[in-house]
Image (cartoon, rainbow, N blue to C red; front, side):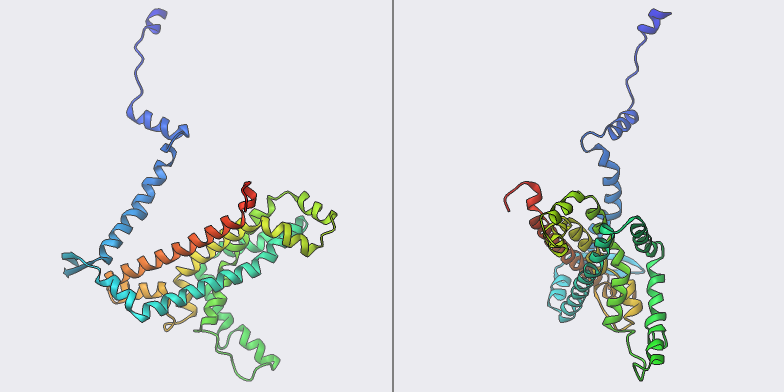
Length: 310
């Protein structure tokens, strides 16, 4: 019996077991295979279809494509159309302005989290995370109540006698900018808190013991150490702001046109799929260019942390 068990032929693992073992082993590229498959299905294939539509002239009949020819005409028309340049410039200015304001308002909050006590830190975390638990559409509609002609802001100013007639804030660039900053501010604060919280507090104590003021410590110690958080937060806020559709559509009104709303109108209302595809491609490429610039700047200002000569 024992000899039979010893000499029993060991069955080699099947293909399924080999794949499962490779995925769970943590070696090589195998653990990333599920993510690669998902990204291929939800990103690579749709992007390939998008490119095929943007660089094609096609004829349709009864909702089906009956002929398709390769062409650069749509891209050429987009790059030579002044409306595209104005629209993308407006979107870029809005995204950069929102990113700068989020950094301006968010950094002091992260610094207060760094220097505050336990209750202060809990309060900041609650106030920062709580808005993220509410839909962005709901938060955007809340600004209609605040900034409208008979909204909270105008009513307060009129009752205080500071203005004679209601301010026109809705359906303007300023309404869109205000909504963008409020909605995306937590996305800037959280990376800053994460980066600033992991630093050794003894560096700040050493700076103060050597006679540096609070401003000097902030400028020479805390600010350089928080550059990765600034870069991460800026990249996230810029991407979300540059490609957003809901806030400009609601707070900017029907006459406010940015890149995302232009693509929506081209695809949904005009049914110009080729133009929408080219616009989406331009939007993605310009967004990636800015993200690369942010990454290069972040790497430049953090070279000293990697032991290389600046």
